[in-house]
Length: 627
Image (tube, rainbow, N blue to C red; front, side, top):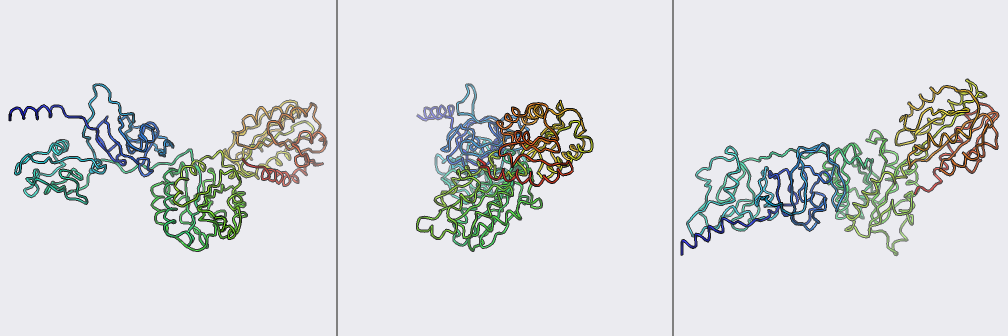
């Protein structure tokens, strides 16, 4: 019977059943040495605190389970996943997918890919994983990693299988030699590990290389880790914005809701992927009066910013959001505070209920200063409270559109977290941030300059000075207003296109260098040429302005080319000098002609029309809906 029993035991030991190791959401692929393995992930790995770097191919510093959810292999309820290590990448692109915001990373030494848990034929996957760090992820996940088996009889001892495997994997100089007070094998039938929690019999809470086994528990000798510190992201370049968060610190909000507000900020920061090449963020808290907690250049990554947010203490007082918006307009978006100029300015205002001052006028001034105002109203006034609201419908009055893009209403503070992703998606949609565009920084302006013989060299230089005076009024860069120029006689010549110069100084120098051509006056052909050579290359989200200067009647027809310009959305200003025909100027100009056609009797008087032209450009811009 004894021999038969031993055979049965031997048979079972020869055919061990494969079990998929369980890991926690926080386990990074780089912690696991195995090149290919299968694991079981728990539920809840969608949480933004489990960092993921990359898309499809992930940096090994990423959470294995977080990457599995991001890739769509698993959902937030967990499950099994197959992981394969691959070479490090020169760059990892962040993206939002399946409820997980992955982060960008310039480079990392090792990568991995995840796929459905379908084992390949002939491939054996490990039942126990080999870890490179001092922490045991299995214990965190609740896995019962048995280091000791119950002895078959009292007083007998058995070498634990799992412990033997771990010790074999460790190098000889990692573990100290056991002393008499730290036996590797215990005779106690029910060993109890030393540590903060008491697992079931036979469980080891954690094992650390360089630890000594003492009375069935592990006492760490020293921490040991081969993992580098967390990589610092340069930020998501697809969301390059300068962002100010205006948080409500009024007394009415209470400590609990103020903490919810701070958690909301932290979640937004995590989703945004803060960095010098991406979004930067500062925080202003308001009560009776506003105060900057920190500005755009104080913290350059999400981790530091989240720590700073947690340290913010509540100011108390009233809820003067209007005063806070005015403060941000005047003080926050300055170069000294980290404003980059090339990134849209965005201000997100959180309001508990309703403001205790007016916000419409201060918001209008902010918008005209190029700031995109977003309003998030939490627990707005109910019918019986509306009598106390100073400015009814304040949220719609404060933003530049009323289509719901710039305002969000949240019924309860406990539902605020649901707006994280909708808000992040909107503030990062730089093509739709029309409120950061003003009449100074939103156009492609093409000058069409008459270089005919009747102008003369001296007057031509006066015309160029007029062009320069108009140009210098605008904010010129590749992302702001761009300037191009065409000179014409019987023929046409592209002096420079919209994509040639990206600073005001370069544009003004290019205007000075334009040489006088001399010849006839074919204005109609010049308009057609400008449409083809200048405005065809205009950016889709830019306003198109043509400013044509001529001193005489055209030798060809201007009506058809002018109509073509109007149909293509090119706003045309016609400036006539001396012998220019008034009726022709009115045909060329956009309707109404009184706002777009100008005439001066002498070249030396051109400068007088500059302020009126600029004013009309801005008036027209501000009167148009920016949807």
